[in-house]
Length: 475
Image (cartoon, rainbow, N blue to C red; front, side, top):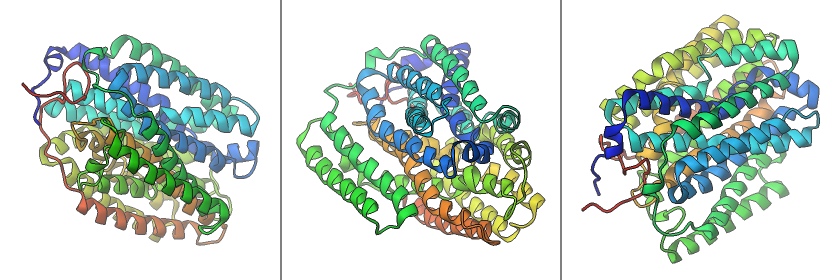
């Protein structure tokens, strides 16, 4: 049912909005830099920690994000967004400190802890939706989404320089500093939300089963891509996922406040969004975060560039384009619909990646296409996609869909590494061309599911007062 605009929203001054957004941006950066800044350091990581170390670090990173999203965002309905946000950034800082180790197992643990900070995106959009409305909300969504591609591209360029000069560990040292700043900013500038927490108790039994489901699916995708989809480890994880889901269905029917609210997840407003998110992450974002950087640095099948030139030519320009255009895309999405913008971005990105496949042997052609890709994918796709988990959520369980949608990011990346890793590692002359065409195919499937997705009417109203999207009955 419809809700009146929040008095808290109306009382926020422009200065308070700017400080709120600044705090959320730093919290998002604490996660985003862990993904974007490592792209130019792929070769250094593999040379220092061993062959395949980068992929080995990536799976637990995204697995942790998936688990944290499906549990902790929903928990924030009960204990407050701000409290969970501060806690998770502190955990990220601890993980970053572990990543300074020279031991791969310790680094893997650190990456797992870092991955939990993936929920900063879901929490940030929930906080924005509760506090802002209309065009202001759209523009701020664009600003938040632009952090997905880094900090105006400067992070990728800086990461390349730091890697060449000091090694990849210097990147983690910088991220630790950003994380500590984020903790201070969130504590000071994000308003408290004690007054509007959800009634009832957290469904921890459901949390265990959905965690098992998500972990099972993520590890099935990871093991299936590397050991074969019919391998024993892959089948064990798939079985665990099925058992977890069936148990979740039983629990969902027996508790008053289920973790997920499966009745809403079955609607066309929810499940197609999850599929689209997985497929977009498993295609277009793997092109950005893995295939293109690997191609740029590969001396045999690629262009043989160092980390600095990889960032300068292929990563930074597109990230700059994203930061400039994403706020306008957010404003446009408020006008014509977030799902409409998402579909347009998928179509455009399919075309761009197809052109990359055609011109895969031409360094400057791919570099130019990556600039366009910064607009079509990281701006036009990620801006609405980052917001839709909140906008399509049910009033009864506002943290459920954002949590699962954000978990789908991790599952999508895992899927992407599962198929792209073996192709990129094959070392043939057509390695990267094949990878691009594979991404195009997955992108087409994503487009089909985006057409199935039914938009939930967007209003300028906030979901609930005092910074929460917890459901409240209207008078």
